[in-house]
Length: 66
Image 1 (cartoon, one colour):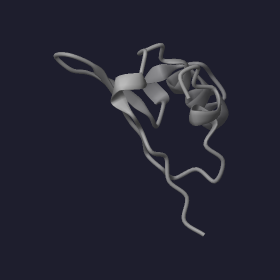
Image 2 (cartoon, helix red, strand yellow):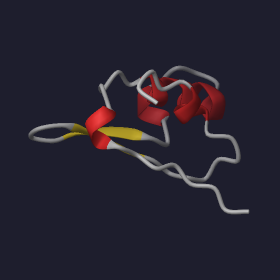
Image 3 (cartoon, helix red, strand yellow):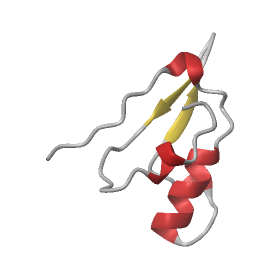
Image 4 (spheres, helix red, strand yellow):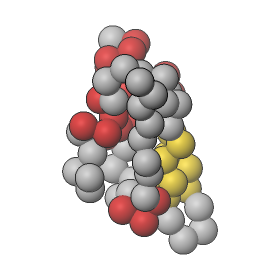
């Protein structure tokens, strides 16, 4: 079964919690530079860029805007 994350950039508050939990789960430390999800800053909104490789999407489960 294929799983995917559907991202609505208009809902992203750019809190970066998803980056922190991803690096904690995958690398054992809260370091956004080691995260597999990144929040890109645009002109009018922030856009999450996700890797979609995890069996369990911890980044989506901690999002306060979902």
